[in-house]
Length: 79
Image 1 (cartoon, rainbow, N blue to C red):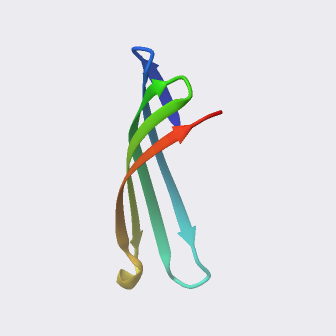
Image 2 (cartoon, rainbow, N blue to C red):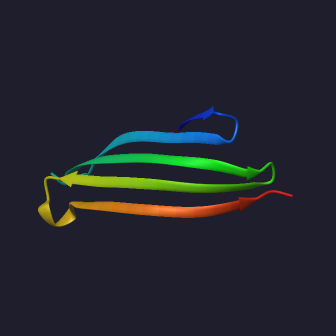
Image 3 (cartoon, rainbow, N blue to C red):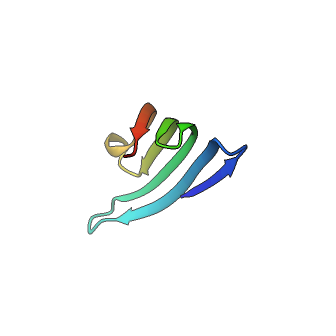
């Protein structure tokens, strides 16, 4: 996971991961995950966040493959 603040109130967020699942059968899966997001500090105690998450599972068993896309919006308050 990586983040970088710029212009004091903005933060860019990113993450990438890969994993491989080997089963005792002949099934093998490759898993890819990617996240991209931005955070805006409205106040020191209040932040707005928007992220996009992508997840893909490749498998040599076609029924086990899928792709997942998510867009998330959030508001964080710290006291």
